[in-house]
Length: 113
Length: 113
Image (cartoon, rainbow over all chains, first blue to last red; front, side):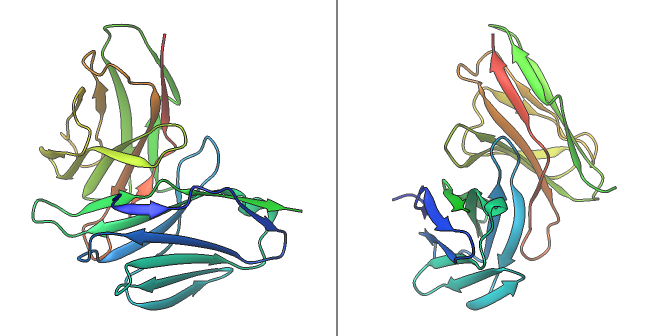
């Protein structure tokens, strides 16, 4: 089982619709959770982070965390063609040797006009 | 402007050659990281450093070396022992407070001649 799992996609979404991305993780001790957006050929850029169970909203983005189910999701409302990118889920695990950020393989999102 | 810079943007390596990738940050972050990304895959940790003159191996350290002589700088050397170096190399930095949000530089694409 991979430490952080994401559906690779592509997730095809009509413009204006909601894109729903999912991520599961295996380490129950994980404390912090991040979503990054990566355009083709570019480096990842942080969209948002979440530490506590529940929802966190930032503009058109909502992150949802459920630690009991070891599940974190990202909703993109009113999807735009500029949202077409790969979205990386990252989970910070707390280790004695040093905290480690583990990335999923990413979900590719295509927003069609 | 605060940020992370990486150079060069593209780097070509000949057989048996060592090459060094530069990473500099002016965010006053304590921790710095090097990741490797292969096409269609997530990020894998090569090395990280939380303090000057100290660094730790990540998941795929073989064939790589680093130094951390200054807080702002964390160069990565890809040695001739790394047999498959072609990849996108990403440098990141973070504080060490709660969350340890990592921010990425623009990346260096390494190609083998």
